[in-house]
Image (cartoon, rainbow, N blue to C red):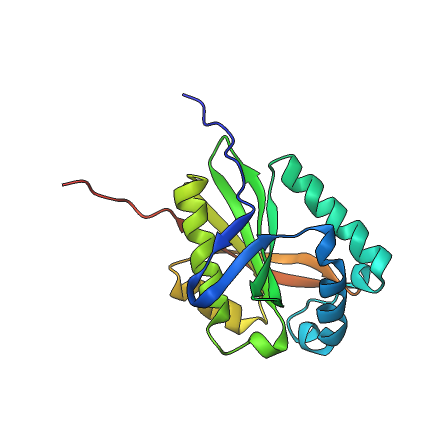
Length: 189
C-alpha cells in the first residue's frame, strides 16, 4: 500500500492566539526586519544568514521556500501573533514513502524564554501526526544550542546521533546532534 502525499496546510492554529502561516512574498519586509534586528541573537545559536541581508535576497529565499511547498517537499511557516512575526518553523525534506520529515525553528530574541517555542513546536508536531500522517520526525541542533536540545527532549525527541562537522557555518564545520521522535501510538479500546 502506497502512502500519498498530503496537502500542506497554509495555516496552523496554535495556542494563545498564535498561528503558523506559510511564508509568502508578502512577508518579505517582516523577515528582513526581524532578521536584521536579531543578528547578534542568532549568532549565539550558530544562525547567521547573509542570504537575508537585502530585500531582493529575502525575496529570492522566500521564492525558493515557496517552490519547496509547491513540490510538497516541505513548508516554512512564519510564527505570528496578530501582526507580529516572532520566528519561523519548518517541515523539511518530507519523505512521503517512509512518512518522515525533518523539522526546525528559530525565534527572535524577544520571543525566547516565554514558552513560544513550545507553542509552535506543539502545533507543528500535531500537524505532522494528524494532518500529514507522518510516522517520525527528525531535528538537528548545533551541539552548543542547549535550549533547543532541552526543548526537543521535553517533547519526547531522543538524541540518536552526533554528526561531526555536519553544519557548515561561517567557514567552520560545526557538530550537530540528530534527534528523532516517533508518532505516539494510539490505542482504541
